[in-house]
Image 1 (cartoon, rainbow, N blue to C red):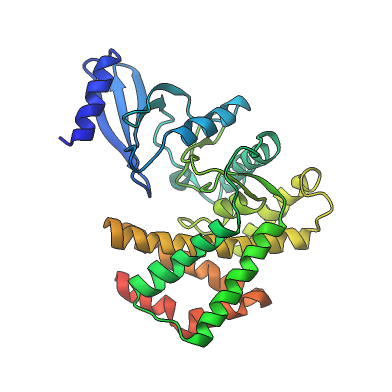
Image 2 (cartoon, one colour):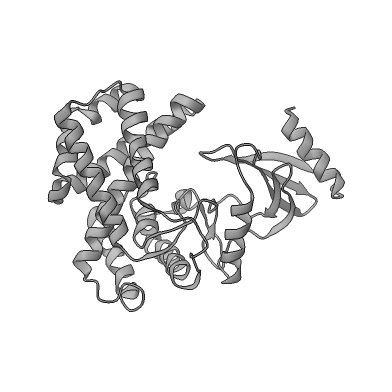
Length: 330
């Protein structure tokens, strides 16, 4: 048994939990782990967040913001900030990813888009970190550093570096030009739980920021873990726009909103591909490599329809990125 798990059990004992079972519930793309504690008919989730790598403060702060407006976010039952342990509501194990089907997608995504709308209009983001230019550039550089250079061993030529820099500059401007609202920052099918009431339960929100209005919508509808036909995605985006245009995107045309959405997706997917590569190379989590081809395909979809992304599309084709990554993960 690891020292951290031993310390966790000692903490649970001190809270009065006896004869309980503790099983790993999930791990995410950070140093956090989640355990399910069961005792009799009760169950809770215990988060293990090593203080030297992760802080519980932001998790607690954002959870409070969400529960205050009656979104389904975990209620913190007990906390031990010195050791990095939280005990919270258990929403079960029915991920959106596992529940989504063509016949229920409109309903489930409708619930999720309603939650995004509430987060954007009812939660103040003024006390959250800014999704600023420095952070946007840092995230996109993960693609160049971890995917191109470290995973694939690609060194860009001067001409290719120029295309890359123009792409990054354009995507930064696109993000900063949008209305800035509460952004969950990882609002996708592996962080949403299916519930019978007050659907969905929302997890993994500790990195929330004040940022672009289309970011969470892109995370949801151009999910790195599940893909839908483009006409269906476009319709969902327009459904969301119809409501948002009455409130926090007044005066913005549907075509402008769609363009914001498409370009925001490019920024997010560049970041995601870089993170997947880093998780494999640095942390030994090779399973995330399987999600790169789908995510890379999103870049190609936008690149063929958006003139400002022609440079990126050319770069992807010149470097045969789709072929290289598929060869690597076979």
